Length: 250
Image (tube, rainbow, N blue to C red; front, side):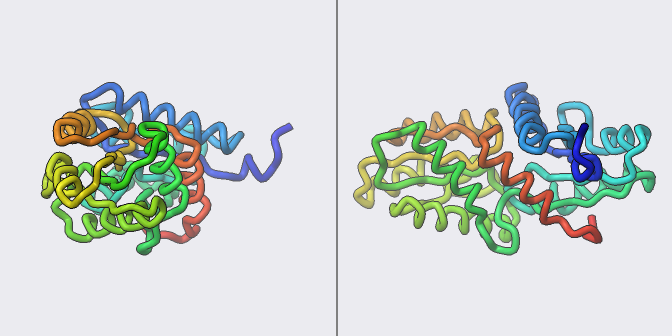
């Protein structure tokens, strides 16, 4: 018999950005499975803002039709930029009033704090890519024009550098400089000989492919894989779920 405290927990809806690259959707589905395995008895459903179905509004409507009165929506985003500020609230509004939806913080720094689980996942991926150690790191992110979002990426880079005890610089795949090749080259010019790239991405895709190509041309010794369905990431999702106030606004 399922414990009563599990049956009382609302379903969790993961919302990814979406990509034309099928590897991205596969990574989101894998993360949903990992979260569900870590929280038995709670439905964990993936959704996407673009390119892949279903969208979050459709998933929320289906949950309401199945008799659920509440749901927790987790933005699978690493910064609180446009998609968190505009697209997520729009999706909740589109779902209608039949279900009470609470939206968590994004997976990046919340209230300026870099979660240890996020750092742990980045460090694990770096160790997988280059077990021999490095003397400098580039944190490669997708990119945004939002200065506050870029600031949050900078906080992650600072925390990652402190964790590893090496210099860590930010690069962006789009929307803002520098690119991964420039960031790697600058660290090498400053004397670093073993520069690795940490992938501040939740899923593989064209941006990560471009980062890998640029960084390797610039002399990086390794480029880490995206976080995908690491245990640390699944734990971070559940931390966000557990932290959302019952009266939190969309």
